[in-house]
Length: 130
Image 1 (cartoon, rainbow, N blue to C red):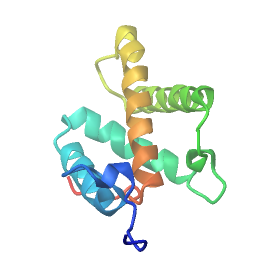
Image 2 (cartoon, rainbow, N blue to C red; image 1 turned 180 degrees about the vertical axis):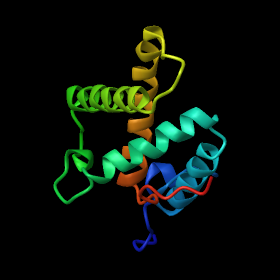
Image 3 (cartoon, rainbow, N blue to C red; image 1 turned 135 degrees about the horizontal axis):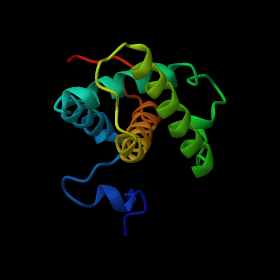
């Protein structure tokens, strides 16, 4: 009987699974697909990356094992307020309808979660190749 047999984690037993070795591939795929975002969403993504740069430090809540849902929702609400203020200050002739900001909050929250995931797993911080 062979006692030096190495026991593999369950995720390494399935072909094509995303284990620790393939995590870079997952991040690269995510960044590639983010390049295909619509123009307006790309703009929001860049701004969210800039906002999260300020929160990217050792001990930050974005690196908590289980980030708090309320904190992420509050971060999304603050980002929406910042984006709303920037839209108003840009001097655009067309005012943004209030309905847009309702669904935009959900979009911003998803973009924040994606950016936090990317940062937690070694993705490029705020660097975009659009």
